Every structure is written in C-alpha cells, then in structure tokens.
Image (cartoon, rainbow, N blue to C red; front, side, top):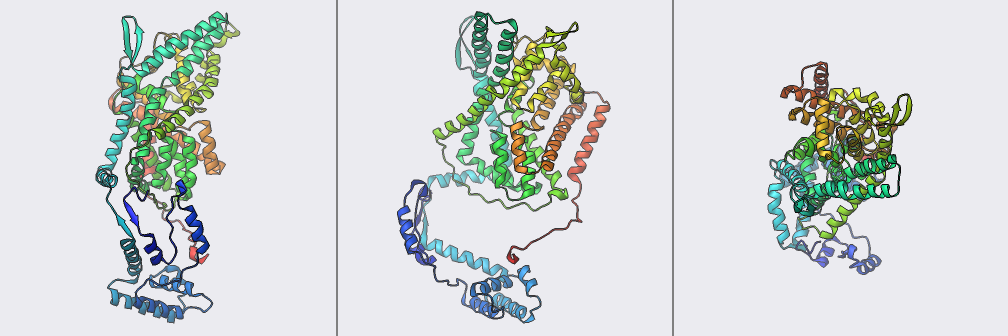
Length: 624
C-alpha cells in the first residue's frame, strides 16, 4: 500500500533516528516475516533521550527534583511535563506543595520568554517538529495519479456546503439506475402475440416468469397429479403469488446492491462517514454510527451487531434504536411496490425516503440526547480515508451474491411459511354456521383477525383488515408485507392474480380503502403513510433478537420497541392527516387534532432545552 501511494522509506535511517530496529513487512502477503523474527531476537530497549530543547530539559529536571523520591525517573518527567501544561489532575494532587508549584510557575514563565509560546503550546509543537524532522529525513513521496485524482475529487466531495447535496444526488442516481435498468429499459425478448416482443427485466420476471411459466408449470403439475382444488389454489394463488411477488423485486435489489457495492469499495462511503460525522456529532451520534447505517442497507442484523465497536454506551444505544430506520433489503420490495404503484416511478421518491430515514435518525438522536439517561459526550471518530480506486469486479460479484442469496433464502423459508398460513386463513372461515373453505375472503379467518385491529390504522389512511394483516406478518420479516398483500389482493373478488399485476392491484387497493377513486394525491398520501409505518416500526424478529443482545437489557429493549412503534405511528399520522389537510384532500376531524397534538409533542421534545441540573461523574484515568 505504501509503494502504491508513491511513498519511499529509508528504513536504516528511520531505525537510527528512532533508536529501535525498523523492519518493512507486508503481513497480508507474508513478505518480510523472516526479517521480523530475526529482528525480534536482536531487540533491546532503546536508550531514552529527551527530544525537548536543552532549556526545557533543565526546567523538567528542576521540577522533578521537587517531586517525591518514591517515583521513578520516567514518572517524574511525565508528571513534570503534565504540571507545566496545567494538568488539572496533578495541579489538584500537589496543590498543597507550594514550593513545587512555584517551581512549575517559574518554569512556565521561562518557556514563554525563551520560545514565545506558553507551555501548553510548546510541548505538542515540539513533538510535531520532531515528527516532521524524522519524516523529512526518512520519507520521500512521489505524487501518484490516484493521489492526484483523489485530491481533486475530495475538494468537491468533502466540501462543507456541497457534500450533503452531492450525497443525496448520488443516492438518487443509484435508485434511478436500479429502476432504469430493471423497470424502464426493455432488454429481454419473448414470444408475444405480434411476434417477438421486448420487456423490461421486472416485467419479464413478474409477468412471464412467475405470471406465466412458473404459474402454468405449477398449475399443470397439480392438475396432472389430480390434486384437490384447495391444494391447487394453495400452490398457485398462495405460494407462487406470495413468494413470486417478493422475488419479483429481486432484479431491482440486485442492481441496487451492485451500485452500493461499487460506492462502498471505491472509497466514497468512507468519506460520507466523515461528512456526516460533523452533523451527527450535534445529535448524540458520530461518524462511527454511519458504518452500521451503510451495512443496514443490506440487512439490519449485522448492522446492529456492528455497534459493538462503539465504546460510548449512549451513542451505541441511540444507534441501536435508530439504525433500522434505514431501508434494508427486506424493506426495498415494499418501497418498490409503493414506488411503482402509487408514485408512477417519480425520480424524487427514493431520495425522499432516505431523507426521511436520516431525518428520523437525527431527530431520534436529538430527542434522546436531551434526556439525562442518554447524556454523554460523543466519542471521537478516527478512520483512514483511502485513495479512490476502481473496485474489483470479483469483489462486487461476491458481495452482491451474498446479499441476494440471503434475501432469496429468507423469501424461500420464512415468507413461504407465512404465505401458506395466510392462504389458509384467507380461504377458510365460517359459512352458514359451519367451518370450511369459503369463496368470499371477507368471511375468512384472516379478515376476522385483521378486523379486530384495523381500527388502529384508520387515522393513518389504511384502516382495513388487509393492510393490518400485512403489517402483523411484517413483524416476522418485512418481506412478508409484499407477499401477504399479493395473496390477499389476489384472492379478493376484484383482484384476480392472473388478470392484474400487484402494482395495479395496490393502486386500486389504496383507491378503494381511502374512497378516493381518481384522486392520485390522496392515494399517494395513504400509500406513503403505509410505507412510513412499515419502514420505521420494529424490524424483523431476527433484528429484534440482535438488538436485545447488543442492548444487554430487557428494559432498554422494551424501550426501543416502544419508541420505534410510536415513532412509526406518529410519522404515518402526520403524513396522512396534516399532509392531506395542507393539500386539501383530507377533511379536518378529530384525527387532525390528534395529529397536531403529536406534532406539538414532537417539536417540544426536539426543541426543549437540555437539563442543567445534572451531576457528572469523572474518574481521571491517571489516578487509577
């Protein structure tokens, strides 16, 4: 890496100046390890020589002579240096020794007269002067193309004003690219009614693969096996419709992973962490929290586990509570479903959703940081920024494969099981006083269960049993939301799965549930409210387990679940009620008053002053 950056090091000279033998190795390639072992056999402690100026060395000796004799020489020098720099710990420790403090004050005055800087400034200046001298004599740097390109790009990308807008534009381009290659660009030929026709990848997967080949194959297989009608319905309308609806979004997810992997491996994401550190630091978080946020775009479980590297306990807790607000691969199908069905592929949709997620994370940090339970200074963020480089194709393919494989396995296991259960509950119920298979899904067990809780979501614009059941199933795995809606809408009288796609079915569903046929604004608000609740409510069961392990407390775990649920409900309520009121599509009602009350509480929690009557406990490490 050193050579690639155009850096040459004079190892012999560096050894001489440091007083210890220096060995150049490349551990990852096992180069120089023999030299290292030989050097270890010859190793000896170097003679300690002060690199301070002679006048300062004399001052340190005078102060050392005033310190207790039971301290060794190294300790005396350390304490003397600390006293000259007005270290509160040692000033307090020796405050009764008037003679010692008089010697310290005289020494500090001498440094000011000799070097025209105070003692606190002299010592770091001298250290860096020695470091710069060693570097000047032992290192030479040849400007490489990569370093030059990195320097030019970083002047723009890391600009204080442009950094965030550029980041939002990059996110927008990533999602536009993913949608363009899968939903707009017609690439795949197929045999149509008028000869060879072309379809987008998404249309081909949904309409031809799952809507045609797989459905026909499964239907023919069950018919040839003379399976009963209920089993044929389970296979076609349940398994294929439910799991196929989720896997139908796999092309977008794969392309999304390709673009995100490119950004991660090129070095750009590391710079975003530094850009956001300046902002996050004001809200109880740091750039360290951005790394789990990047991981969360793939899966929330490893993102939550990644918080173990954050030392600050409150910073870690805030991160664990808010990290899953970032849409993971399981939430992407919900985003894509709403994006294509109710927003007509608007370019601003994805940046808006991610801006809403970052807004939620930032507000969570501000609200929780003002509580005494979360009050603590943010830890410093230090990370190496690499030069930009072209990612290796093999690494991108490996990353995309691993993430996509995890998504498919979940779709084939958890979602399969849930879809089977949903199909059973949607197809069986009470008719004429007897339990059995039904024709009208409104009389099903699923409708009865969903109707018990549907009233909770009426203020949010989707108070129907279908959406309620989808949300409940989404608590196990967020992909279940799409699979459940596919099964429910496909079984409902107005939506035959072989006649309409899930996209048009969702659009018609929100149109009917809001009573806003033809009102695209109200439909968009209801669907956005539905999306917001699913994005910001509690994550899947696996992520909740990881969160509990990282929090290490049932109390904090229950608090996290409660906070996320309340936040999701509040966001959805404000979006639908107040957004609809401003746009003139939702009338003023009791729910509107509730939304204003929630907004008032939110603003109060966000803007209230921090508590001042707190007691800080400080344990100086030097006294331990």
